Amino acid sequence: MPRQRIAPVAPPPRSIRGFLLSAQNRMNTNESKILELQKKVAACGLSHIAFIMDGNGRWATRRGLPREAGHKAGAENFKKVVRLCGDIGIRTVTVYAFSTENWKRPAGEVRAIMRLLDRYISDAESENEENGIEYVFLGDKDGLAPALAEKCRRLETLTHGNRLLLNIALNYGGRAEITAAVNRLLAAHPESVTEADISGALYTAHCADPDLIVRTAGEVRLSNFLLWQSAYAELVFTDTLWPDYSLDDLAAAVEEFTRRTRRYGSLG
Ligand code: FPP
Image (cartoon, rainbow, N blue to C red; front, side, top):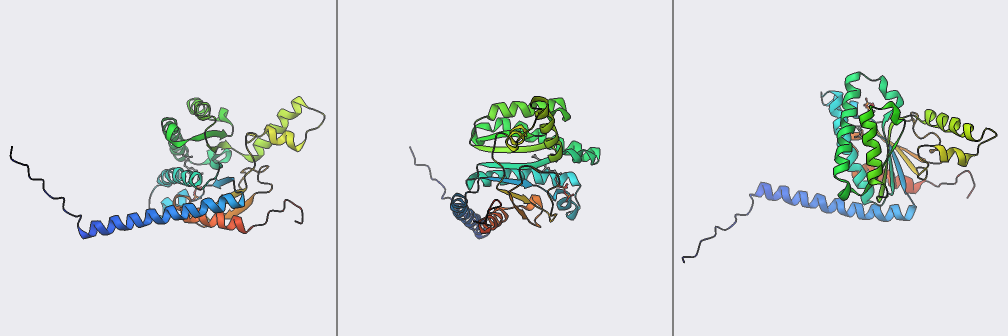
């Protein structure tokens, strides 16, 4: 039988080779940044980071896009940042996805955010095996569309016990959370309640308080986020808009955290 000639594989053109090499370099640089961050995170005891993901609207407006496009980009980046946090050894991530005050936004924008959340939850369900994320939703599920609330509950049950804990604050407000907790406690212990009782009655009873809270997009306030739990958190503010928040921004926040001395009110 005549031997078939196999055409030699042509090397990629120079422009593509350049692109592949620079993609490879970028990957190597990111990997080494992640390794370095893993060491820092382990050494400084940073375990729980919370994010106020602000700036989606401005990100879109600056590009001449509708605000909804900013939320879409924000939701995509949120997935990436959570993955990065897991990669660098963070055990718990909490994000402010939708506050009790966000219902005041135009109906179309609220619908767009709810759709993104709904899709995100469906994806999280099907990606459970590879993601290894445990989801807990902080906030009043009764204020959500019943189908969405049911999906949240299902995801919580499905992912219970997974490695990386992700708290998603959805229809969440810090004052409403504390008020509901105190009312529930008063019904059971009308004489007095302790700080531990209150901590245990909050949506976050299953986890430790955040060590670090990061807010993007230049605003310097907590906006009703984790009011009780933030008592001793380190706060980091950055001008970066949430859809642009990158590994370098995360590295800068970790670096800033390592420079802080946490005294919890004592002198040492
Ligand atoms: C703040 O940006 C962002 C929000 C109120 C919503 C956050 C929502 C997402 C990131 C998308 C959905 C989330 C998940 C978890 C899938 P802004 O609109 O206030 O921005 P602006 O201050 O620039 O207007």
